Length: 360
Image (cartoon, helix red, strand yellow):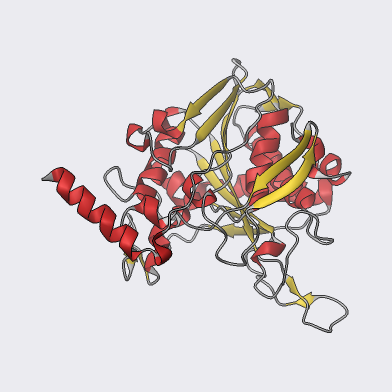
């Protein structure tokens, strides 16, 4: 009887999907450097994910010496390239000399297997790395419907009881925190990330995102003008317990790089987002950063997500990484333990050439 019910549910989803097609599995190209001391899967923290397309790689850089424990999350949304690449740059270059750093480069691996439905950006972004040609993947915002295993509801009520009018947001990882052990596959994914934070004793976590740029340019105009997402681009969102740490980090960010960013406190009435729910469910200070991605601009045609003149990938990756370093330093200055690293690229180093110079 159980098998019959599962088969019926699967057939319902497959028949419901447009074109009755399923995305190919996404197998990430990750080339760990000498600093990676252990490779795990998210299912090591929540076994129910094992064997599914939502299980994903976890990379641990552990000095074996006392210090802070931190988490970097990329790929919450498959169409936000900078966070994924920032995570790869850390995995392939950094050695932690005090404390421990845990990195999830593709948090929603299922979303990486789906083509971008926002702007139709190509799934394969070609670069030249230190070892030759390499492809950076560009996916979609949400879990593949086939991996979710059920049609989208009319409305989505997330684990904290918040109601979202768009039922497709049930497949948006950053609306499903803190997750549910017996929930949808996407809710189980966020549940597993919370389990990792607890089991690894994470002191501070940064979830790296991208938004549309703060500008627009109409056809025939000679220059850009304000008109994009001025609220999200260049923003750091902090759990209420992390506001002092965040403020310190942003002051250092502007002093070091000249980049001015906004500080936003987690809205405690809007539930399901990582920066609020990780901080509420664990002892970790949790943050979310937003860089400006031309690929998110609905007014652009053929956006260049690698080498845009104003918002190149090097700038966006550098923003996330410098911000993370400043958060870790602020944590130590305000009484926490220190996270010490070598090989962690500086913002100016990243801006000096193409991103491939920092990838194996």
